[in-house]
Image 1: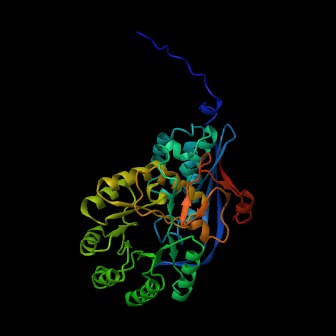
Image 2: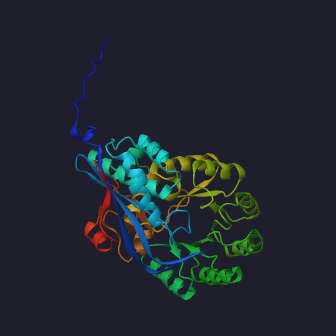
Length: 395
């Protein structure tokens, strides 16, 4: 009988937890203009205020994350100001000096330090995965189970409200082989005007898939009246048609609609995803780091949704390449992402916050393959667009 002797594996500096201790957690507020107006049912934006998080480890590795929202605290409770304040005041102090590779322990520490504040937590955790991945020479996806997918078909949002401009924009995306699936933001105008606009878009883009995002803009009565018109137009998916807190009526809307209904703002925590899945409040789930509060928690949300028979959609909040890369790290490890992703955010910014790492090609976005999040942050540019300097906590 052959006996295999245990061999002691020597410590490697990159795996030494002392070297992986968190030395600094810093934040920067960056004002990033967009290429055009982006109109939702409750706001209109012309620029994105992005909170960039920088985590520096004892070994010198630097990781980046992104805190994102839309138009202040309109989409959810958090605003750029609250995200930054939460990180600086409550989250960073409980992380300093601890090993950055203990992701679950750090997530628990942040949960004890602040309730919800999911965009703030997601930004910090993204930076942790980036820093640890760079230290180990591994993509963040490898720390989440390993990549299954190399890329996804990517959806583009039409949200100017000017149908002639939107038709021209969509045709340009088609010709450039950038996008052939489009999500139309509605709910700001009266339903009959939105349906008229959608009719023109469908006629002008006959070979394209059209999704609509009502952004909580309709009542249940309006859903009953107008969703049949969306069915006749061949709309592929309807996102969050009624107010987020009214999951009971979303059950009714979902049951009546032959078009799949996606829950977004109505399900943040995994417990909310489970409740929505159990009751049938949407048959598709939008996955976002700003809702889950971290990479591993978003992967859990995907598992909970899938266990309840929900299809999965890779949502976004117009994140830059930093946030897009963090999402893709998770999406690439999921068994299936039924609807692909809409991470077009880097392309709607006048200039992205990264210098390299993301590729859009043949209607797809490719998952970064480099260490950490796999993108190179353009520090010089973000400092030129920043409101002040880096600030934060250190050992």
